Length: 111
Image (cartoon, rainbow, N blue to C red):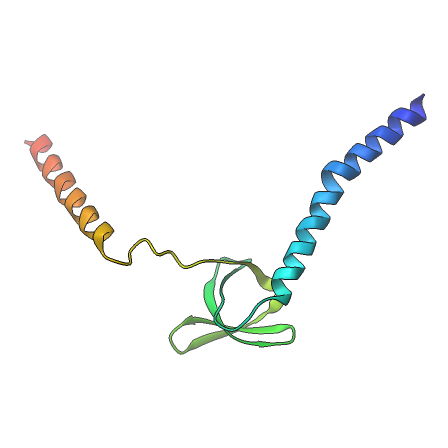
């Protein structure tokens, strides 16, 4: 009976901890193998940049115009999409209006 309980606990441990970790590792390997020039990525340390060149296990990451970092390919955490929220500038105008309203409310409340 004790052996059956131990076997069930080991099976649960495998199902809930080991299998998801293996899936995550497999997905990360697939990501690293699919990287190409121009992809926007973030590293494990939080640095965002566009891939300028891939050389085997090394990636040249462009973090600013004419500034490239040489990093290990395995240091890339994920591919990111660039946000399109400020394409037409509408969001910027709304934020400015809100900032003006907030500052006038602060002045009125102070009086």
